[in-house]
Image (cartoon, rainbow, N blue to C red):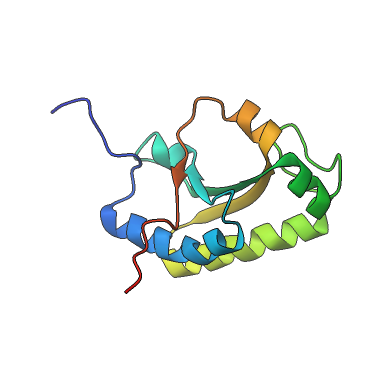
Length: 129
C-alpha cells in the first residue's frame, strides 16, 4: 500500500452528503467557507466532523463584536455566535448524517491556530442541473 491517502477519512458518499449540507452555508458565506478541518482530515478514528467558516476579521468583528474572539478565533461567550453555530451544527449534522461541530471563526486567530493544517472546501462539489 502506498503512503497516499484521500483529503479526509470520510467516504465519497459521506463527503457528498456533507457537500450537499454545506451548499446553503457556502451561499450565505461565499467568500469564507465552509471548510472541513480537524481530526477527520488526519485519522480514521475522528470523534466529530469539524466544519468552519472563517470570516475576515472586520466581518467577524462587525457581526459578533470587536474583541469577542478568543485565541482560536471563536467567541463562546456571545449568544448570537452560540445560536448560529448550534443551529448550523444541527442542520449540517441532520442533512449529512455525520456528527458535525460547526463554528464561525475569526481569520487572524484561525490562521495562527490552524497554520499548516488541511482545509478542505465544502459545498463546492454540488452540481446543479
